[in-house]
Amino acid sequence: MNTNDRLEQIIEKFRAREYRMTPQRMALLEILCTSTEHLSAAELYERIRAQFPTTSLATVYKTLAVLKEMGEVLEISFGSDNDSHYDGYNVMPHPHLICVRCNKIVDVETTATQTLIELEHVKAIAERAGYKMINHRFDIYGLCPACQAQEENY
Amino acid sequence: MNTNDRLEQIIEKFRAREYRMTPQRMALLEILCTSTEHLSAAELYERIRAQFPTTSLATVYKTLAVLKEMGEVLEISFGSDNDSHYDGYNVMPHPHLICVRCNKIVDVETTATQTLIELEHVKAIAERAGYKMINHRFDIYGLCPACQAQEENY
DNA sequence: CTAACTGCAAAGACTTTGCTTATCA
DNA sequence: TGATAAGCAAAGTCTTTGCAGTTAG
Image (cartoon, rainbow over all chains, first blue to last red; front, side, top):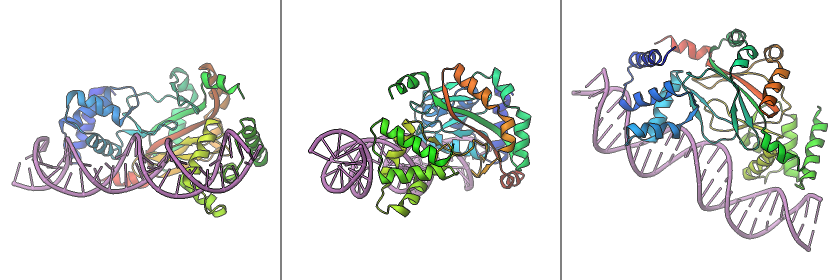
């Protein structure tokens, strides 16, 4: 789905629930629908502030809570990062390599992923438990090259 | 690997690094090596207190930090739970179904998992990026049956 | 108009840090 | 016996909440 359709769809969902579409919310949606990164609340806040200097972090969190409740955004954490990151579903799900020592995160390119995880199979697993799948994540934990080198000292 | 071998291995690693093996740490290790759940720091703390009533949460966190640094425990978060959970690797990796609305988590039985994710393939992906795989996680996000029913109101 | 939203500040929840006393090796 | 760990309390982060003023519909 392209960015504009996605935006329209969400805006429509807001209307249906009689939630209001404010400029601040619009700015957040645009960032979520165009960014291919997993941004934290603070990062989203900084980007919105570029357009709306008076925006507050609390508003960002409140809007994210609404979007989560609507199932339009996914909140995830990596390693032992203290903050959550938000995924607007415009990213093709792909595995992350996460270093358990230094928390370095590397994205795995998706070419191989398609064959690795059979999407239809995953969906079927979810449905068997009565869940309606929206997204999934697949993360691999280990030691990055630098931390492996350090490990040799033991 | 069985529980005792696992324990021995970790104790040996402590010795090699000249870290000390205290009763509190031993208690934590035993819980991590025998529990098949993903326990939070608070839950670990409660279980240790059954044996050592004066133990503090800070000590639990400090020991978990040591174990993380050694790559002997995995810290993960689910949904928008505020607290981290710790996995001592005695659990066969299995997918979780997580409801994005109410955060309900269901474990997927592992029979199907083996065929779903080809472990050797995953390891190879990690190695191609220079990472040494320790563990992985695979989580499916969606709506649980109850939240789907509620969704129909819109 | 008026119910919903914003933005500030204050409160919460979990985790980390500092410091003194205790203890493993 | 000396460096490391425990336990307490205080400080830090990130996130949520309460409330007065503002605004979308």
